[in-house]
Amino acid sequence: NLQGGVAGGSILQGVLRVGDEVEVRPGIVTKKENSEGGTTVVCSPIFSRISSLYAESNDLQYAVPGGLIGVGTRIDPTLTRADRLVGQVLGLRGKLPEVFAEIEISYYLLRRLLGVKTSDGGKQAKVQKLTKGEILMVNIGSTGTGGKVEGAKSDLAKISLTQPVCTQEGEKIALSRRVDKHWRLIGWGEIKRGKKIEVLEP
Picture 1 (tube, rainbow, N blue to C red):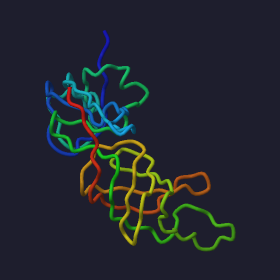
Picture 2: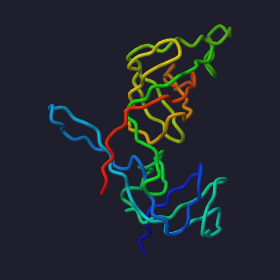
Picture 3: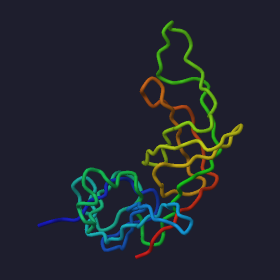
């Protein structure tokens, strides 16, 4: 009676139907040696077919944007257990955006930190500018990943991501910085372009 993995979330655009062939990106991320002796990151999307669709306790034949949907697939449960694929993107095969390991963004910083108490009860601390080499938390869609600032000037920054992300140019992102052992929102931005990584086809 073993069932495949179930993806839960909201449909952003398009329609999913029972029986559709789908893929999950980035899927399984691995490193392989390149000709120069270094390593490059490659991702292998997970391909499957939709076996069922649920909203609340209703069995659906197709699902459209709005509300939360459970998408039953035939993906091996060892890949989906313990939220291993959380933050990944599911869509029709061949229709998903590229996978980026590095992004260039235009960003805006908040003037002051939110939710941080000051010892003297005065104004909140100011948000410092991004500095090269610092580690931020980058939220893209439902994905939260670490990001290292490779370069920053006025309102543009280049960030290398610790985990590749399936996204597209124009997508909105949130930036957080570690302050007193907590991640605090410091700004937001938009992806201008990204460095694509190799996607292996089966």
